[in-house]
Length: 181
Image (cartoon, rainbow, N blue to C red; front, side, top):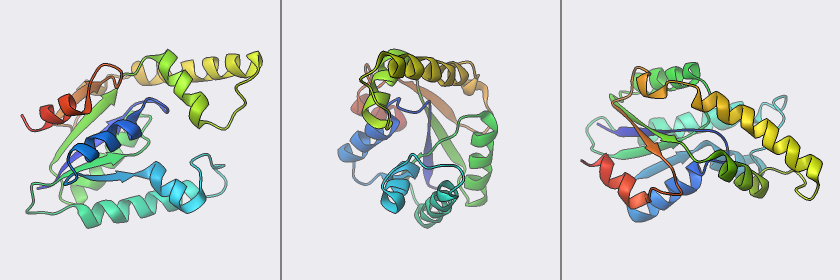
């Protein structure tokens, strides 16, 4: 049965980059990334919610997951998609179960807030050169960060395990080894 790892954590926590490094270590691992699909379709992940682009990307993401999930296989699939609330993860787990997946682990990214804010300036289209912009980003990001880290993700039902990942201190090799233990 395909083992699925779901990434969990705030935006700009290094989830996608970390997952790409894991796949580079072991190309037999499949990676489905909602952000990559958005970039492929629209050239960006920063779409207005009114465009419907995120829904199109999710539909394409789920078609790819369904194609890759193999009932009689020991494959590892990393699903890198936004899931900010417990209800989002519960819906993802239900859909994976409908596809026949019985083993889902979570990689819970606990990247320090200051690093997430810095990485956000590299990704989010927002001018970095003003103090006002920096204050806005730190304040806005602080709320997102607090929201994620106030949740009891380790106690959510449906996961066989939750591994806390700090991409500044954990290497992809170290985390990958923990999957196969």
